[in-house]
Structures are given as structure tokens and as C-alpha cells.
Image (cartoon, rainbow over all chains, first blue to last red; front, top):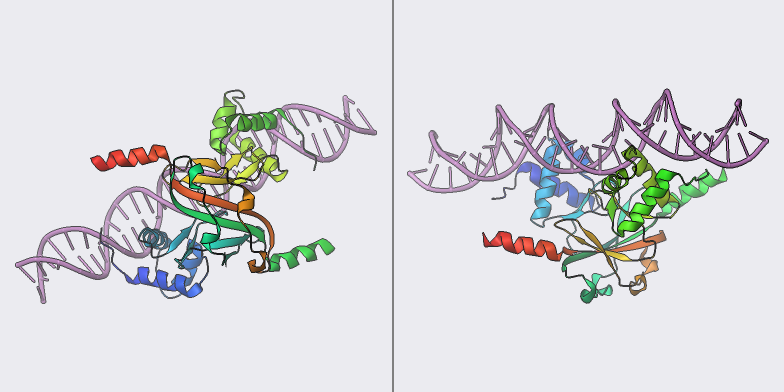
Length: 133
Length: 133
DNA sequence: CTTGACTTGCGAAGAGTTATCATTTACTGT
DNA sequence: ACAGTAAATGATAACTCTTCGCAAGTCAAG
């Protein structure tokens, strides 16, 4: 299969990069739609899948119901808010985590992912408020 | 809210413990159905949710995938096969991973999860075979 | 018993994602 | 420039997993 850089594909990639965040397919759909009103949600899904297959973007399969996509390719970990599901990058190096390969049950290891869960500052405030009531 | 230990609830918990694995709701449903043919899938979902709320079991969420439930409560990490989605425990201690709390963007940290991805021995064989063709 | 809180089973509905397919687009070689 | 062809698109249906709504059932306490 040969990959063409279509307008849609490029737009999706550009918007994802622009956001610098961790967007879901439909968030990205909403953004791209502003420039291409006729684009289909299926196209967004398709292209995100393809772009992550060829390693141009990263697919995050971390907790939460929706997949999220990230234009940042370098290894980094994430912290995510258990209240609002916001995700942010953590800058601790991947090398800080040593993998004991002997314990890997015979698996060939392809990656590792460290996920820290917590409550973001914004939600901390919300919770504090709602407890006052 | 007061939690009753109903027959269904108990059965679900027992089967999950018995399996020692990381079952999905419908896998568990199939097992429990052998003893309680009339149990509803919704009951399984409901009770897994409740049991994990009260920390009697653990809920593993990998987005875009089925949730899996685990009766093992002690801190441990997981390795999961990117081919067949099998999940196994890793026995490296949680304490091996140091969290740099200063970098947490103001989050109050509630947990961490290290997930190693790889290809399990079984799938390695499958792949080797299919490449020979 | 009767009340009230909790639970169940069932089916329907919801969310997120993927598949299908006719049509359109863009590259290839001539 | 043009036909041939492989890939991409938009629209929508289908699919999978999960949750919801509700009537009926269960249980403990008064």
C-alpha cells in the first residue's frame, strides 16, 4: 500500500500538531471540520489509524473510554486526571524505569508505558467547592 | 449505600478469584452462567463496577479495548500482548519506579500503572509460522 | 406482615469505532 | 493530455462493549 498525503490527511496531522495535546478522534473531527466542513468522521478515524501505523503519530491506549492521539513521537509518559480525563505529559525519562526483562514471561517487549493517575488542579478546586455545600 | 453480598455478587467474585486472570465482563459472564444460567450480563457489569468501587477487585482500563477485572489487589504491573491482548502480571515491585512528584503539574497523585507491551510466546510462534508461507 | 432500601433480569439505548460501498481523487505510464 | 488503476473519501450502516430504565424480586428491621 502506498500512502498519499491527501488534503484531509494533512489537515488532520496539522491540527493534531497544532493542538500539542492528546485529542480524541471526535475532538479532532470538530477542529478539522472548521476548515473542511464536508470531512467525514470516518476519514478522521481512518487517517489517525493509518498515521499511527506509519509512526507519524502516536496512539494512546491509556485509561478512559476513548482513544487519544498525540503528535509527539518521543518517548514520554502521561499523567491523567481521574475526574475530567485530561491528559498531560510527564517529563520523567523512560530510562528511569528499568525493565527486568527476565521476568517478562517470554514476551518480546515492544514498549512500555507509565501512567500516573491523579486529580488535576482544576478538579481539585471543583471538588473542594462541592464539598462546601 | 449499603452493600449486600448477594449470591450473584459472591459468585462473580468467586469466579474471578478462581480464574486468577484478567477477565473481561463477558468472559466472566460465561463462567458464572454455568452456575447461574439466568444471570444477566448487566448484573455482571454492575457488580464488577461496584466491587471495584469498594476496592474488592481491580479494574484495568486500556482505552479502545474491553475492560478487564482482576481479583489481585496488591500493587503489581502488567505486560500485555499487542497481538492477542492477553494480560499477565509482572512481578517487578512498584517501588522500583520512582515518581518525580515535582513534575506532576500540580496533580494530587492517586496511583501509577506501568504497562509493558510485547508479543507473547504463543503469538511469536503464530507470527513465525505465518511468515513462512 | 409491611415498609423501604437494595438488587436483579430484561431489553433498549448509548458511546465509540469500524466496515461497506459507490463515488471521487490523484498518480502512473503512454 | 488521457486512460487505467490504486487509493482515499463521505455517508451511513453495522458492530462491540457498556450503561440505563424499569418492573419485579429479595432481604433486614420495625
